[in-house]
Length: 93
Image (tube, rainbow, N blue to C red):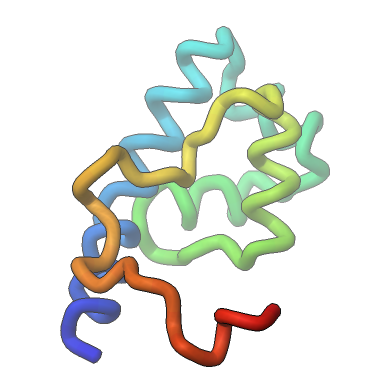
């Protein structure tokens, strides 16, 4: 489990900066992002400062608001969990 925990911590630490980079690359102000994503100033601020981690649902709204190709929440190759092998229980799915 430590590998998953380490991955989650790296992702949590990276999200605020990545959100800012992608938002700026999209030419959006925080205010524009709030309106486009139907999010409060406080919510965007908490995510942007690292105080809060967005839920999957809110992350999808942010992704859509900044453009579906922004991929702001994705890890670069080599940053994921060290064990990327499929589980035996996934074989027949």
